[in-house]
Length: 260
Image (tube, rainbow, N blue to C red):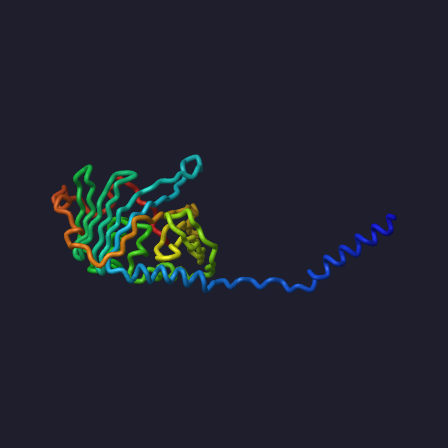
């Protein structure tokens, strides 16, 4: 009886193993999946094609406490942009509320609670202005690629080594989104992009070369793609009359580190 049972078990193992031995190993997916890049480029095209836009960005960034525990801080930006040279960012909190205006000639940073304003000349383009704002005052917005003439330029500049499609989500941004992951030597990111309108709904980013390897997240909402925005939207008479200060970080609110 035991010999028969052993023979049956042996035959069963052979029959189970034989087909597996004949199967070829599954092919590894391409490092850069075309589907993921198609979704990314469709999103960039949707953003680049808008003459003007407004959206809300809820930014979360990670910093470490003295005991090594990661802490998470948030800022909220109400953003309005008009190409090629207009931007308004209202930041009600957390931290000290502030306002930022760029009318194509002058950039202005205003702290309403202190009635303090910093005003400086700026280059006549969004792309050059954001570099000047960073150089002069450490002003940087984590969603800035979204308003550039070529939104994919900043991402592709990281020399991507990996891009793949993850699947769909029905719980992010109040709509169906396609999830993709991209990575390069200096960046790792996951993006949730509207399946229909191709507008970004969320992104989570880490920078492998950053010592803390902190997580940065932005949630997008209230998207509006517009034909135009009145010029007066990008300046403020009240801010212009504030107490002048040098155009540099006032220290009231420490900005999150700029992406490298």
